[in-house]
Image 1 (cartoon, rainbow, N blue to C red):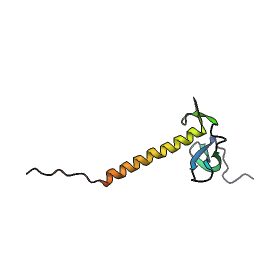
Image 2 (cartoon, rainbow, N blue to C red; image 1 turned 45 degrees about the vertical axis):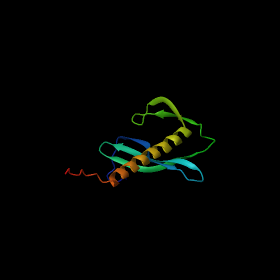
Image 3 (cartoon, one colour; image 1 turned 180 degrees about the vertical axis):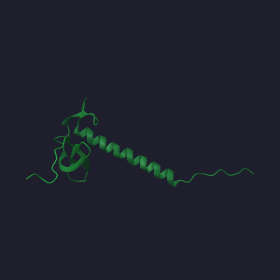
Amino acid sequence: MPDYKETTVTGTAYIRANQVVVANPLEGVKAVSYYEEQVVNLEDDQIIRPQGGIQEPFTQDNASEEFDLVDPVDGTPLGMTMEYKDLYVALHSLYLHLAAKRDAAATTAAVPPVEPTPEV
């Protein structure tokens, strides 16, 4: 007996990282975690399902491990590599950059504009 309203469908499916978390504790192991989801594309629908994940610690032992850089839009290799320690430095630097932008915006918003005084 077939399943109720059973149909044959055509589509594609792939796995992607939908969330990245970087743990940067003051003490303890620093790590990056990727949470994955499966995307199923059908003719007129898309189904997204949570999957597993990957976690990799940042340690002295793997600081010089290299990985290939790829274009996030089409997946083509960029012909460059990066080491884990460079990624850690880049993330730290991005944090400092974003924090400085936030602080500058807050300072600008907190200072009222100076009104010109009329000449007598």
